Image (cartoon, rainbow, N blue to C red; front, top):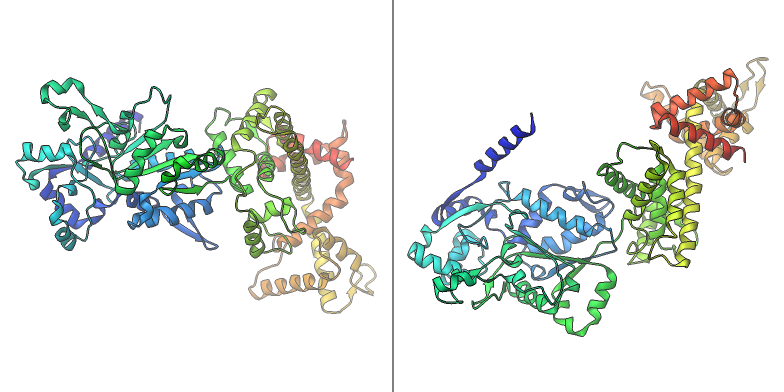
Length: 631
């Protein structure tokens, strides 16, 4: 289907969604679907909740945020459960400005953008449908037409509470256009749109000397005063400020704490009483979520100013720290690269992971427990199993610092350095070493890094390099071992025969002489030591292997090379240790013989087919691992 056909179908769909009728007809919709009369906060909460929630390890993960925000599950759960949910229930929390506080490039703006886009899409669904008095510039709630003295009766009949009063403009229109007949007032379905300024607004402060409060609350239309005769006639007023246009939805207050005080005072009445003052009118009701964002330094400065105390109690601060999970940080970089013009450049496997290691290390705080270093802490936070530690240790580590993740290197810096690497190298492939080198060079140019931090960050680059060295060896190890897979299977069978004899306290037979011999302890230990099995733990490990073999046998399945992950890892490491000399020769010889060349080509093919390398990055990896082994 071509793009023009899709545009036509979208236009047809838009027409189908439109609705217009009288207030009496609208009440029938309310009776059938009470959710159309929900508040702005309730609408945001249901929009998020309707996308789905998964509970993992006691943590609620909201699918709404999963495509754009990574590693912020705890912060997002707190945001939804401590602000949106109670606000949707009409608790006092809804009378607060939501202030997202966190470091630069931590996801605050992305979060607000997602809420805006989400509200636009949600207003086009049945559950998110919004209706307003037709022709009202503020998209006013039709239920405001119900007189105050009848609202208790309305609640008894419909189970819906009505808050807010009819605006001055619609009060006049009710009398002049509809003769006071509420049931005849026209109502239409509206669709939120930031571009069309319907239900979504954005306010950004500019020069305090030139910015007008009318940007927030609207202004008098002087061209109509002669026609209507008075500045207090609502028809002579433009209800086009951000607070007017964001009614029923959401308004983003950018750089709120940098704003002139006169703009902030309007928010006091709006948040607490649900109304604001505009022109020569009575207070105007508005139902909208006010969301702002700032960094920690600006927030500390704001609360230290005693003149701002009235606003302090009307703000709920939600910390949005940096992501602290290695695998999630990698996803952030993948997303940013996908959205760039360098997405066609080959980035060798583990490149982004190693860059993410450096970034996460800069954000973590040194554990107070002496038995855990930052590398272990990073792995535990990412959900890896680290021998000797469990989930209780992770919880304890998280409680040590309340502000962990509020400082460190931001994702933009890393992406800038990756971009610089790609442009400078001018090749179709980059690897982890290229990026680490670029990260190191960039520290000198970073405007906000002190000399002390720089030294610390250089150590983190070294730590990430060591981790990459281990990863690189394992990659080549797997590729080489695959080429010697028959040898690996033979070694494993030999190990299992010895383990069976050891556990059964029986003898083995020499395949040549046939005489009885004891299990080969040296062979078994040489394999077990590869994965850190201690002398004291060897018996339990061997018995575990035997139990696994028996379980497979009972199910009629054959225990093979892929049946036990740790044993397979041990076999691979043992075989690789035995093959080190071959690896050294084949990766460092400038003129390998035919047999060596064949072996190298097999390994390169394996790295390309199974591990995601291209020919350039595979050969670079082999040369690098060869240099490591030759040291």
